[in-house]
Image 1 (cartoon, rainbow, N blue to C red):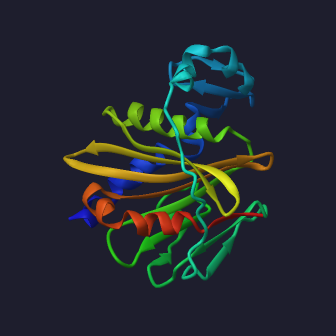
Image 2: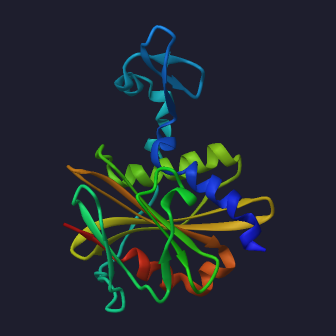
Length: 225
């Protein structure tokens, strides 16, 4: 049943990651001018003008309590396969007996890497941006955009600050319902002066509850260079 709804899952994830998160479209006019068109129908020549429109970014002021996890997390010893970010910002290790790589564009056009579980109906992608964005704001952007695009409530299941392989990341677990299915998005958010990284896994709520450790083990393969 879940495999029949994968296209919907891909749509949801596309709306909560990459360039979709910034609520504007880059366009070129007939005269060759580059403009930025915003969700409310207005436009501007300069992208930074969005900073002068606080009503578009009001959601960033939302207070989401974040629990600090004192026990550090490291890559599992079974995660031996490695991929490396093209900008050398990070490497990512995964267990090839549990996950397989798939063409990134098959899940999300913005993804640099993509994975499919060999154990159940779960998927994962890694998206990196050259623009540094505070990791807490990355989480808020994902939550807000999912809610706006899906038109349904998005619940924060977990919001945690975790030390992963020596680097602080935000773990955000979001739950939403669409077409009668309840989805869980379990993600890591990271940023430094080289850019921002979002690693997201997703599946049904029922599968996630039984396999949360499997998802966390995959996410924990994130190693900053």
